[in-house]
Image (cartoon, rainbow, N blue to C red; front, top):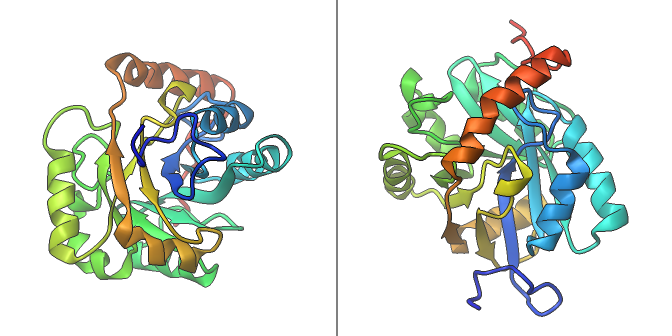
Length: 244
């Protein structure tokens, strides 16, 4: 087993295994219950899990409580996938949700006001909210803490390759994330790193040393997403409208 492989290694390692982009059923496009997500992450050896639901923190807060009771080896970081006027951002170490529909710079400032960190998710994915499409990548890059160099849900095109090149060009840490919307995807991609990750500053300091573990989601798992959206819409948990 390599140092980057978490499965079965809890209690026998000093490294941390971190996924900075995971969804639960609090998102409009996921049916994964927070408890199920926590259990899967703990079973598969992750030590830190950022729950980054679209527009909401409820799933992350519930997952944090579940982990504290049932999975003491797992730290849940409360985060959000933030819809800005010009594409998505990831904010972590949050206690209050960030309003949708802000300018990217305003959203970053709102995360910083809570002492949080900011990442750029799936920046070159043509099928999802990307800062690339707005031409804001270069202006936002100096203000963020990482770029998703590998997003396991990018299955076609060269989006991950271009993201890795962009991170290198801008001198930003690149991370690998699962972007899991189902329990099956938990742990398919993550980063392995050393350091004290209990605070935003500790994570920021450790990110440049991250080792990327780059798996991919299956086509079957991606096909479930439209079904999840439909079920959530029926439940009244559709995407929250942007607030101007």
